[in-house]
Every structure is written in structure tokens, then in C-alpha cells.
Amino acid sequence: MRPQVPHAKKLLVIGHRWPEPEATAAGSRMMGMLEGFLKEGYHITFASAAVPGLYGTFASAAVPGLYGIPLEPLGIQTERISLNDSAFNEFLKSNPFEIVLFDRFMTEEQFGWRVRECLPDSTLVLDTEDLHSLRQSREKAIRQDRAWNVESWMTHPHFYREIASILRCDLSLLVSAAERDLLKSHLPILEGKIFYLPFQMKPATEGDPVGFQQRSGFVFLGTGMHRPNLDAIEQLKNRIWPLLSRRLPQAVLRLYGAYRPGQILGFHNPPDRFEVCGWAPS
Image (cartoon, rainbow, N blue to C red; front, side, top):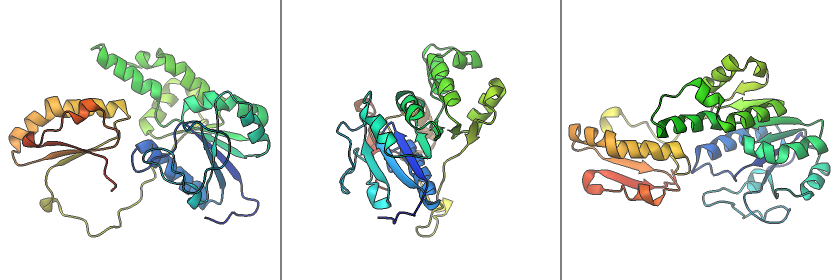
């Protein structure tokens, strides 16, 4: 357990899901931010409604989610919270957090108004993860077999919800510089309210790097919980791999990632050198 710093600033993180850094990019990003706040001496509480239950601190051995990691050994307190529950207001009033971080705009919609009501002086930060309205408007254009344009994005129902969430918060974090530039160019009113924060990657430290000539084959990495990853796997299976495999008859394509649906598992075909391997610990 990390010792608490006297008079440390208090940070509340409200998560749509419990972080699974070894299974999802969102979980990896969240852990990167949590570690950054810990280094700055913050006292962190991570709360989520993803696991039903009463308020209270998890036992130190509790690991929410199939691929979750325990947060309390890192010095992070955990709280189970519930939607539409006034007990959350009491929790806020008894814990004067200086900063409250929401990990998606949906989480801010659910809890942000209660935070503003109970902690009017707190700084509210939204981590967008990605612009959901942008991604979903592109998916809609693909499904309808038409070209995507900015109007497709700005008329998507989630666009208004997402922008409203950004406006309600004091600062919003963007993982993509392209998304930042898109917002700035079409919504200059958001200048000063958005900040580009890419993934905080750690340099590889295990062993010597393997030279290119000693490598072989292909790897695809991505969780099955993210729809664009599933679309990418379908493209690999049906369009790209047939071309690559003919040109490289010895190469093997291996797909790694958690939460593979049955349709993707059905693509596993070792004779065709297309292997769906699932989740890997490293």
C-alpha cells in the first residue's frame, strides 16, 4: 500500500468500467493516468457503477472485471456506486475532492450534475477516450455505403451529448491530435477547454530487441469489445489475408485480444495460417 501524503489533493475518478489495462486500450490509458496522479502525490478514489453492490471499499483482493487488476495495493481506494442513488451525494459531501475525472461522456452525464451540486468548487475533467460521435458517424456511413463528411458527424445524436458534456466540464482530454484539431476548427468555442493527452507509453525493458530478419509473420492486437476492431478483423479475414497469404505462403497471422465474440472465434483456421489466439498475458 502506497503511504498517503499528508494534505494530498483528493482525486475522484468515476469509471464507466473498472480498468483492465492488460485487455483494453481504455484500461491501459486509465492506468497511465492513475499512475501519473499517484506520482504527483494525489490521494485517489476510483468509483464505478459497473459492479452492482452497496457503497463501501473493496477488499484488497477484489479484482472487478475478468481482466481487472486490484487497485488498492497501488494506494487507490475503490468505491462501488449506483446510478440514481442519493447515497452518492452523501459520499461526495463527506469527501471534498478537488478534482473529479470522468472516463467517458456517458459517465459525466450520469454523475456530473450531482458532483456540481455537491462539490461546486471541484474541477471537473472529462477524458473523452475517443469522440464517440465521430466513430459512430463513420460506422453509420460505412453501413449505408456512403462517404463520410463533417456534417455526418455534427448531425449524429451523440454529437450534441458529447459537446454538452465537454462544455459542462472544466477540461476535456483527447487521445487523438486529429480529434483535437477537428474540434478546434469546427467549434472554436471549445478553445481552452480541450487538451491533447496521448497514451503514456512505457519503453520496453525486457531483453534485447529482436532484429527484423529474425522476425516472422503478422500479429493483430485489439479487444473484441471495440466494434472497429471487429470490423478490422473481418476485413483482414475476407479481403486482406487472402492477398497476403498468397504472396507470403509461409507467414502466419495471429490475432490476440480479449472478449472475442463467437463470430470472430469462428475465423480460426490454422491450415489457412489464420489463428485467433484470444487474450495473452504479455
